[in-house]
Amino acid sequence: MSTSTLSRGDALRIAAVVLIWGLNFVVMKLGLKGLSPMLLGALRFCVAAAPLLLLWRGPPLPWRYLAAYGLAQGLGQFGLLFTGLQLGMTAGMASVVMQTQAFFTLLLAAPLLGEKARPAQWLGLSVALAGLLAIALAHGEGPGQMTLIGFALTVGAAFMWAVSNLVGRIAARHSDYDPLAFIAWSSLVPIGPFFALAFWQQGHDAIRHQIHALQGPALLAVLYLGLLATLLAYSLWTQLLKRHAPSRVVPWSLLVPVVGLLAAAVAFDEQPSPLQWAGTGAVLLGLVVNQGLLKLGRRG
Image 1 (tube, rainbow, N blue to C red):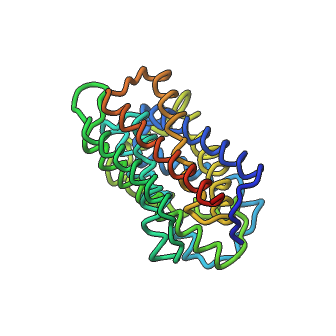
Image 2 (spheres, helix red, strand yellow; image 1 turned 180 degrees about the vertical axis):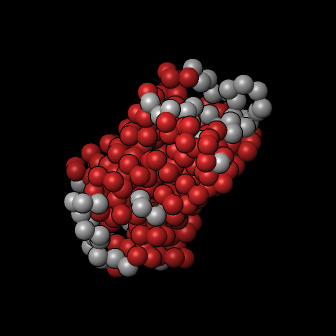
Image 3 (tube, rainbow, N blue to C red; image 1 turned 45 degrees about the vertical axis):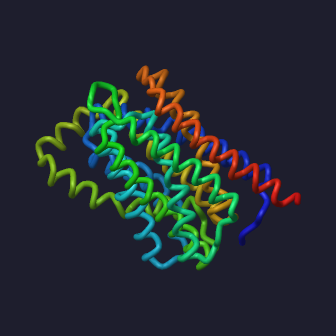
């Protein structure tokens, strides 16, 4: 059932998701130093699916919802994002650009769910979109710079994230499922396609070598991505989307870049350009406008 007010528990869930996903981009970069994008995706979802298959029954949903969510959130979002990070997307800017998912979600929610956003929400997200366009203009091909292909792939990943938001919301209308079971079982779906793409791109010998050499930062990255970023964070996120309309929940993810930019600066000494900082500021301003004007509108 949808509710309009965020409880204290919801606020804590949002804070946990923001922290985990904000650190997520640095962890991905570390994982990609030892693993190819497709293999990292396969191992991530193996870890996410494995612990719960013996503990949870499948959610009371048709398999088409699990398959759609697994392909959109798993293969679509992370296949594109991991590839973008490998092809020159910086960790800090990835944490910002991924927030176009908020714009895509609201755009798709109106025709598919009949959940129309308020004018204040569109105003806030329009400001955020202008900021993301400014970031796109600041691409470059030098060392440590964000590449245009990396940016484009990351925007594609954000669109697939929005699709998965909508699938989770539609599934919630069908059945009151357990979010943790939903995430664990849907994590089975992208494993086969990820492995197939990894073998197709690199061959058996290269994949076997990467798995045998899996240790240190790459191994910790797989565990972080599978257990925290997938099982825990996406379970909390799905639970929020079950309880609230996407337009109420999704804009809070715009806080993820605050953590992402700080983490990337510490881990990789990433220094965004002035135009990227301006764009990031506009993204965060869009969140303030979105949430602030909504509160004013309800008081008036």
